Image (cartoon, rainbow, N blue to C red; front, side, top):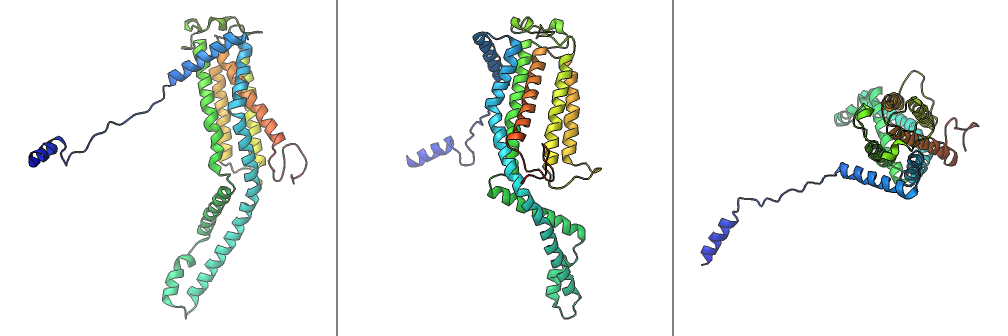
Length: 318
C-alpha cells in the first residue's frame, strides 16, 4: 500500500516537472486616469461656478502649488547645499593631480636606477608609463568618486535632482490630455471636433470666446512662445551663474545642448498651439507662467552662491 501510494504521488507530481505559477502582469490604464481627471474637472466646474477661462489657470496654479512647488523648494535647498560643497570638490582636483604626478615621477626615477630590483620595476611599470592624458583621466574619475561620497555624506546626491521632473512631467502630460479630452480635439479640422462639455463653446473671454477651437487671432501661440522662452533663458542663466569657473566662449557643453533643445521645443509647441484648442493652450500658458514666477521667487528666496557673479547684481555672495 505504501509503495502504491508513492507511485500515485509520483504520477501526480513528477520530480522532473516544475510547478508552473502564472505570472502576474501589472499595467496602468491611462484612459481611466484621464477619464478621472476629466470627470473631476467637470465636477469642479459645476461646483465652483467659475467660467472655464478662469478655472483652467486657477486649477493649474493650485495643482502646481500642491504637487510640484514643495518639491521645487526642497530641490532648491539641495542645490544650495551642493553649491557650498562644490568648491571643496573643485579644490580636490589639482591636489589629486599633483599627487598622482609625483607618484609617476617617482616610479620613473625607480625605473632609471640601476640597483632597483626587477620585481619593483615590474610593479612600478604601469605607473611609470602613464601619460599626461591618463593622469587627467584618473584624476577626473577620482574627483567624481570623492564628490559622490561627499554628496552622499550630506544627503544631497545628484540623482535626487531628477525627483522634481519625475513628478512634474506626468502631471503636465495628464493635464494636457485632460484638456484635449474636454475640448474634444481629435483632428486638425475644428468642424469635426465636439467638446465633451458644451460650456467650453461660450465660457471664454476677450477674443477667445470659444475654448474648444484654436485661437482665431493666433495670440495664444505668441504668448506661449514668449513666456516659455523667458522661462528657459532664466533657468539656464541660473545654471550658468552657478558654475565655479567661467565657461570658454566657443566650447559648448551639455548644458548648452539641453538649452538649445529646449529652445527648439518651444518652436514645436508654438506650431502645435496654432491648431490646438484654446483650452489646451491656456493650460500650457498657465503652467509656463507658474514655472517662470516660481523660478524667479526661488532665486530671490533661496539664492545659490553664484561664483563669480550672482543674479541680482553685486559681488560674490558670502
